[in-house]
Length: 622
Image (cartoon, rainbow, N blue to C red; front, side):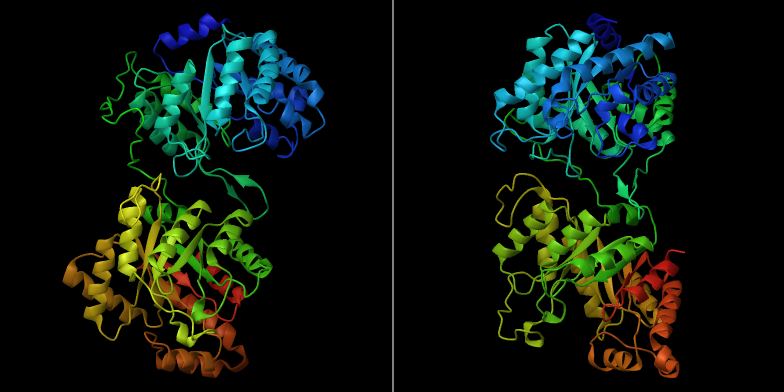
C-alpha cells in the first residue's frame, strides 16, 4: 500500500478497523512483561507473525509493527541500543510477509512509543536528543516501507512535538498519527486536558490525532468527545484498553472488558467522530472481530454527533463535566454488595504488617480497604501514605479517613491535593477523635470545618476545580465522598437532620458505626424514609467482630452509639476461650441479616486480628 491509500480510506468516511494489543498476545505465549518485546522480531518472529495473522483474520485493516519500544533508550535497557535499525526493519518485513500471505488489503503502521526517558524541562534529555532518537527509529521504519507512522501512548506534549518533527524530517510523505494516553482524571501525566492536547496536535500538523491505552472504552469515548469539540474537522484515532487493569492474587494482570462490550462501543466511537478504532492493552482478536462486526452494521452514511462549538478562547480550558469514577463508586452504582474493611496505619515508618494484612484481605475478596487516621487520637503514620502504598503494591482500592479535627483550612486543602496526587479517590469525612483521649492530650484540637462543611468543600469546590476561596486549582478533583452515620442514635431526629445536611453538601455514601441489632438499625432507616423519602445514598453498615466478653462489655458500656443485645453478650460469655471464633460467627450472621436492606458492610477488625476479619469477608463474598 501507499500513503495515498491511507488518505483515501480516511476520505471515504467509513470507520477503519485497527488491530488490538501486541503485548497482550505475546505475554499469553509466555513472554515476560519485563522482557524486550521488540527483540522478538529477531529471536522469535513466529510469535509476532502469529499475532499479526490473528488480527488480520479478525478483520483489522491496519496493523501496527512490533516496534513500540524499539528506540535507542528503551533498547539500551536490554543492551540492544546498537540494533535499532535492524529491529525496526525486521518488524516491517515480518508484518509485510504476513499481509502478503493473507491476500488482504491491509496497511502497515510503523509503531513509535515513548522514549522511556523524561525530556527537559522535566528531565535531563534535551529536545534535540529526543528528536535524533525518533529520527533514527522512524527513518528505519520509513526505509522499510511502512504506510504510515503512529506515535502512540504518549503523555508529554514536548515529546510528541519532537516525534512529529522527526517524522516530517525523515519521512515527509508519510501520514502521521499522534495519540496520547490519559490518567483516571482525564488529563495526561503532566496534567494536560484533552482540549489542550487536541489543539497542540493540530498545531504540530498531524494527519490524525487521538487517544489510546488509559482506561476502558467509556473513558476514551468521553475524551474523544472533548477533543472533537475543539477540533470538529479533525480525524480521530481511538484504541482503549479493556478497562482498568487489576492485579490478581497470583500476580497476573487482568482486564475486565469483553469483546461484546467493545462491539457496542465501536458504534459509539464512530458516531462520536472516530475515523479509526481498535484496542490497546488487554484486547485480543475477539475484541477486534466484535468491533468489525459492529461497524459493518452501521449505515453507509453515518450521521455524527453534533457538538456545540466552544465559546471559550483557545487559551482557556473547559471544565470537564464528567470525572472517572472510582471502583467503589462504580460498584455501588451497579448495585453490588460491597465489603469494606478498616485497617490501621503503623506506629512507626515500617508498613510491612499493614501491607501483609492488605494482601490477605484482597485475596479473600474485600472490595476496598478503609485506612483510619490516628484512631483514638493515637499517633500513627499519615494514612494517605498507607493508602498509596496499598494501592500501588497490593492493587486494591482504598478509602482515606479524613478527620476535620486538628486541621485548619490551609492544611485541609493541602492534604486533599496531596491525597489526590497519590491516586486516592475515596474519602471518608469524619470529625475525628478528640486529642484529650489520646497520646498527646495537650495537642491542638481546633478545626475550621465541621464534616458537612468539608464535604461541601470537596464536592462543590474541589470537584469543580476551585479551592475554598474560589481560586482555580488547575483541574477538578474527582473525590467520592463518604459521611458517618449512627444507626443507633440517642436522638434519632437530630441524627436524621445531620444526615440530611451531609447529603445536601454532596455526600456520596455513608459508613455507619458498628451495628449489633440489625432490626433496630433497619427501623432507623425506615423512620428516615417515612420522614424524608428514600435515602439518597448507599449505606455500608458497620460490622465489628467481637473478640471477648470483656471487649463486648467495654463497647456496650463505654463507647457512645454502640449497644450490644443481651443475647450476644450471653453468647460471648458462654464461648469462653472460643470467644474470638464466636465473635466471627456473630459477625457473619450480622452480615446476612444486613444484606437485604443495605448496600454493603464495613468490617472493623479489632486488635489487628485481620485473620478473623478475613473469615467474615470470605463469608460475605460467598
